[in-house]
Length: 294
Ligand code: MN
Image 1 (tube, rainbow, N blue to C red):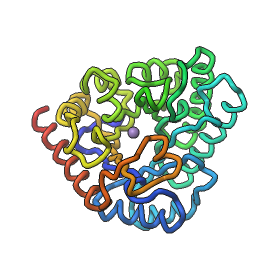
Image 2: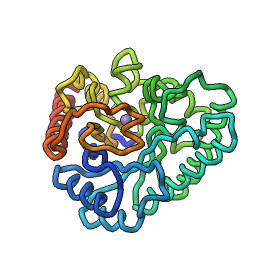
Image 3: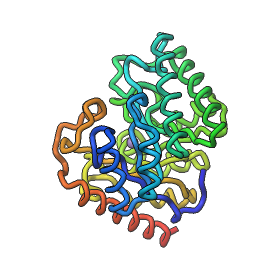
Image 4: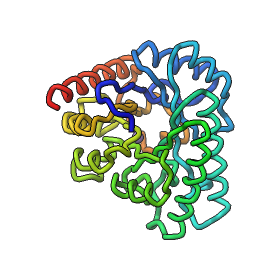
């Protein structure tokens, strides 16, 4: 984990701005991320073959914005499966995403890369989990060559059957056994699955590699039920100095695949810039307050 709470780089998820990644959308999203005062943008690589690596790299450089990347696997490329055709396809997707991150000069690949991002109709199996461990190990080894950190995001039970909590993710990372695999913790999912915000962060400790900040309804920060002070206090306690990225979704901006999988049926905001600027201010205030109480 990067140490030094208070020096965290702040990120904004691409879905705050755009639902796809044409060159025009890429330019809009990166320019707006900069204008809203962020250090980095988290891009979505559901299908890495559709992303223009060199255009993205040039646009990031032009605006002085860092790029990170996340994705969720789907039903046909699920590495948390006993079907080796799906596992192989998932491995290809992840290698493609890794190549994209490397190509745009990014240092991080995260999200629901351990399984499909969907409501499973049954529990995972020992064999399916072992397949996921094995692919993540390979991806991690490949990532080491270019100094990229892999982070696995535990998400709520309606979005995966494999990793719902921080502790399950740490157990999984221990089985993978590679030094560049970390936990990608999202306060929105902690709110659903954990006993609070302090224990999961303390359980991760040095293995916390990335953080998502989202409200309980995925809209404006501070207008839902999440106790952000407790979450940020715990980040201060472990001296987390890594990326903190704002993630929010509304029916106003739609990625045809991702938004449907996440169940984004309501319009929680329509002014992306207002949302993003207020979120950055909210996160900066939360960090300052947590530093004062630490
Ligand atoms: Mn998230």
